[in-house]
Length: 554
Image (cartoon, rainbow, N blue to C red):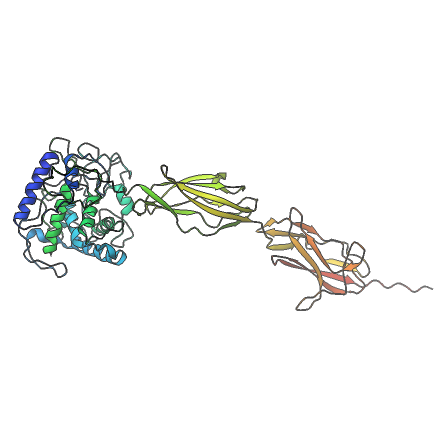
């Protein structure tokens, strides 16, 4: 849909008559004629359709000027453009560069589509007169906004605001925006950054041309096939007259074009140079009324006059680009956390529409399932998040509780046909990473006696005591590779026998008090090594002093 510059083709009975006359004139002059029908679906669509927003443009008004009856002066100039030619064959430099850049980009990323830049040029001509004759700045952004009329249901489709007026400055109803006339909701899904400035701006011809190219190439379309090309154009603005007009300009540009300076392109007669940035026509019998209908599944290429002998049929609708189709994992990896800690990654999903394109504003509900005390932020077990412009949504941060083991998290989107993804998460017990004494007292005893102070240690994980931690206590030699010492201090077992290695376990608070240590009979300095299974190590020094000499008996 374009801002309303100049003459528009009227719908209904008048539409059919004018379209037939225009196509007849084109055929007589050997200019591009309308595609031939394979069942009259397009004419039936034009005869009595109701407004719809099932198109990139919202199916609102568009240019209706047809190409000149004479072909361009220098035909066949898709690569080496002639310097001059007929005025209508001239395309502003920046606009032409944007179309060719989009063709090149699609050739690299979707070669099977075979998008010709002349198709973008034809749509750009019909939608905005090549960005109002190429009135763009050095970056390709229009010097003033190109806005279509408010889609308020009065002569046009009824599309309530979807962007808060961010693109179209209208917080009540949507309007088509920019040189390729995208409605905001469609731009949110299909918008591109065609000039590499980090923004997706529908007012920029490079961004808009690339977005239009990707939209036309949706699915498995091969635009070298007439049927696929027709479907693509009708998906952009579902109107038979629109298809005929775009087809005419497409064939015209294929015969030859030339580059003209920005701002000097030709606009339709009576447009006044396209100075109006936001026309809002009042409804009347002359108001343009979009004529979309369910999208035809066959070749939407009608003859000018419907064949009354062909019984009307209702073609199946083509999936709408804003209808939720599928939900997929967006790269979520293994979900694992230690008890009491936040999972180091969030669950991420990606929504697509029925045509496989990324879809924004889909509500996704994440739910914690199973015997677990893991919770989302705020202690919640459920959270609903809307997908962003790139179709992705991430669950809030998930924190593990004290219960260890596995549980599930589901992600559900869609109401009529819900799509569900299920993720497995696991919580592991804390493992001590630190082993320390609770005090720093020196441990000294006299040979033959016991150490007065008991050794007390604590095992912690990130500063929190870890209960049930296995600790091995060993009297070791002072060698570089420690071994159990068979001399010096020792523990005693239940039978009172000397042992120099014990297996112990910390209590609920991570504390462990070792049994009494006997000094042994030999003075010296000894080592007590404490270790955990996780590798935490503590070495305690034990000093044994010689027993005092006793005076000999008289």
